[in-house]
Amino acid sequence: MFQIRWLWQNTDKKHRVIFIIAMVFSAVTSAALLINPFLTSILVDEVIVAKDTKLLLPVLSGILVVQVLRQGLRYAMVMMLESSSQKTVYNIRSKLFTNLQYQEIRFFDTHRTGDLMTRMTGDREWCRHCMAFISYSVVDSLVMFVSTLIFFFFINWKLTLILAAVAPLLLKVTRDYSKIIRPQFIEMRERLSEMNTAAQENIAGNRVVKAFSREEYECGKFREKNRNFRDSNLHINKLWLKHFPVIEGLANFMTLATVFLGGFFIIQKQLTPGELTIFTSLSWALANPMRNLGTLINDIQRFFSCASKVIEIFYARPLITDREDAADHPEPKGHIEFKNVSFSFNNTKVLENISFEVKEGETLGIIGPTGSGKTTIVNLLARLYDVDSGEILLDGCNIRMWKLQQLRGAIGTATQDVFLFSDTVDGNIAFGNQGLTEEEVRDFARRAAADGFINKMPEGYETIIGERGVGLSGGQKQRIALARALATRPAVLVLDDTTSALDNETEKYIQQQLAELPFKCTRIIISQRVSSVKDADQIIVLENGRITEKGKHEDLIRRRGYYCETYALQNDLPVDFEAAKAGCE
Image (cartoon, rainbow, N blue to C red):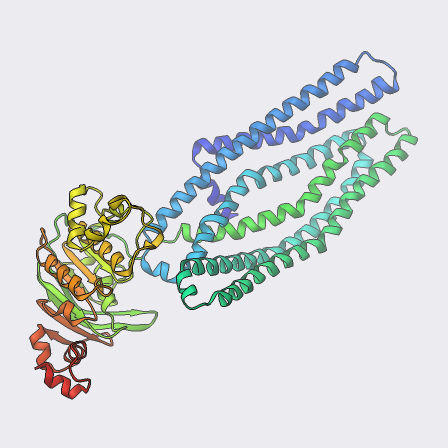
């Protein structure tokens, strides 16, 4: 029942009132079903059997008026339920998306994109379905069954008790079915998530699939997920079909009992033809709720399983948040200091005892083999993750004491793995700073060596970039990403292998532009190329999560370590490392 309470909590006061009125209309229109059979019984007994036409027009007029009013109320009920359910789902959808925006990176490390999309769409839609359909179906069935039973009881209690004897048997069957079916819906929901995840990953990685001619493999993988989802659906349907004959048989028993026993009671003069008409015309009002019970249980159990998945991310809270006593830093300077920082991910040591200092306006170069923890350093600086031990200072203040928005706003990042939005070139560059003028956008694009190819595009800066920058080369995407980072005028500029897809000439141009920026900033350059970091004020070499070398380019060359070896290899010095070290000097 927690899921229903949660749904109600996300309905505002206005739409709660609308929903309640709709439920009242549902109850009234269900109870109103009794009126026309009652008028029909009068028509049979007082007009047809008695052969008296005085009541013919009043009764027929009454039947017509009741039907029109009932249909009018049903229409209003459906419209109100749609209004309240859509507004509630709008609230949930907005809160879900907002909550996802502020989740930490660990959350997305552990939740698959396809699964999150399933929760945001299909699972969330079942919340709307509960308010718009399941709710009034339950009220309809309950009011219809109870009111008809009471009505029958006042007409002929003996026949009513015989018909009502079916109810306990039906409740027993449905209770057993409910216990069996709920875990099956949870299982089916997981299979749906896996199938959607497989489809999402394939669509996102379609270029890789085509490059390696793995279409058949991907089709086979999706068929397996599709088959698992189908089998789970079939299993649920088979369970329902096992219980359906019992439920349907008990419901049909009422109709048969009404005909045979009703005739018997007429012969015994305990029932009039008109009263039998009421029983025969309303026997479905007892049978249908029983028939619908299985379907309603299916829908309710599916709602419970889907709503639970939505609630899981609805109430997910990030561990990395602003402290209540966080200090205000309206004008960050860019003085960075790492003090004995260690960090683990999934029980694997990534960084150990990292210490260095970068003063305001200086440039730090970070180099090292793949997997040594280079990118992790800037992720920790932006508090995408929190350190296990040690501390990170920005402008002399522990970053835990910074407000996240100010901290991350002070850091402009351009990475090798570029993500561009389906927007104009102008919109992508100004993404982090919406107040930029057109001239400023062009200036930052020029500094990133992007202005030339942008002007050659069909609509220049107003050209719409495809999803993830499709249609652009790797180097073009990197240059737009660099312009986007520069446009925020950050106190700390992070370039994480930003020039990996660029030629040497373009790289030199960008390095020159970075040295002549119109604002002062501290720069962190992460690269596999020595040419990208050699002019830095300080260079650190990371190996296996530790700093093994630190100093300027000339200092590291003289040490004849990893940095010297890398420099030799990249400058066509002898491959033999001992000879290469000598050549470095």
